[in-house]
Amino acid sequence: MSEAKSTPKKPKEPFPGAYYLAGAITLALMLLFMVLGATLPPGAAGFLVAFVLGLTVNPKYVPFFFVAGVFSAVMGFWGQEPQVAWGGVALALSQVLVKRLNRTG
Image (cartoon, rainbow, N blue to C red; front, side, top):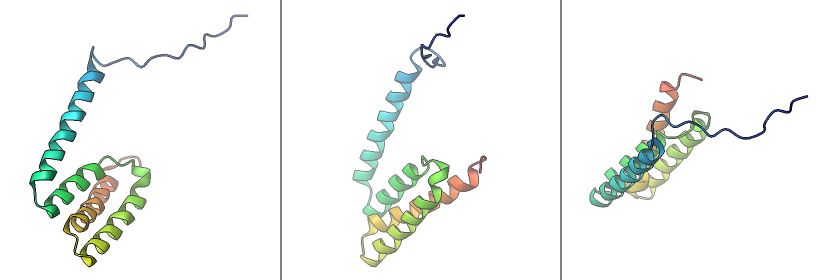
């Protein structure tokens, strides 16, 4: 009897250095959002950052992030915190977008 090899296979890169390029792009985008967030007014910065990060949510967690966004918006407007308020609005909107554009469910 021959035994199957139990060596885990390493995923193949689409092209040499693809993972390094993806890491560099990710770091550049994070730096860009840090700079934009620091230079924009609080409401606009909160909206921008929460919206972009909200687009990265796994679709099965959309309802929870939507509730968190609505809660943040209500508490932010109630407490007169524009960054939190507009961030909550953006998070809720991004979750609606993720839900509508998700093809699997």
